[in-house]
Image (tube, rainbow, N blue to C red; front, side, top):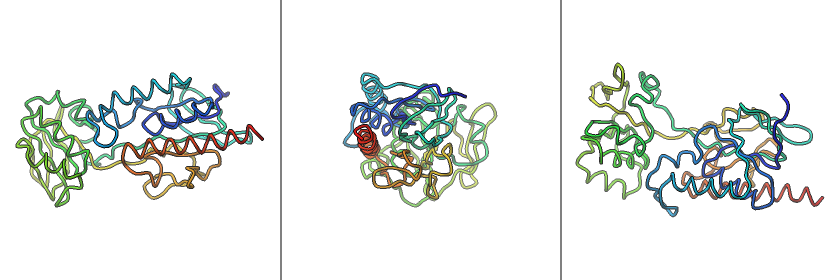
Length: 301
């Protein structure tokens, strides 16, 4: 397969880190293309009300970022990356739409929600198993649902669902939540949320759709399951020459360069990046700055 595009920089991922990185390289005068396997914006799209120094709707914010990148001349390559190769004269990103030459690559593929790994979960995906309370909450009007997890995402999702559902079972395997205090307070004051500590969902039950879940041996009748039990880095498509930690997160130097020269990483896919939206944006900007410094110095030479 011949190369189909050529840019100074190819960014893999169009979430918070990826779009921030693309803005940075474009503003530095570097031609930049990006690839995104799913919807632009990444996991921030699932958040209706952002909590932190960056406020507003996740979907609206992602749209603003994408418009900014497009206005700066960024090139949407409209494909999913499946590999990265080193060449003597640069790098090639392989995707389902072709091969993309680049002088530098920024991997900002983010992370995906961890599955529970229980019987019935995969079978009922999109048939009652969901990962977006804001998107799918209205579909469960007046029904009972189960949320699994003990962090901010789980508690915030339970609160969103409580606006539509008759009852929300909030199942957590620990004896206390990890979420921020204001989410803890809000959940404790919401009558529709039934908290189940020291509990685990072992199976999803149903025929055409979700009809219940088995929790510590007890069957809880419900029509929806929303698992929020952490993230796993989206790095499996990368070559073995790019070192990762035990979770699969990419290891980098202080300037965000990986162990494959010319390939940088930013955001949730990178080991050491914090978990907030602000962290992802800052990481993308830092990677863009390091790439611009490297490539612009090469031009001067």
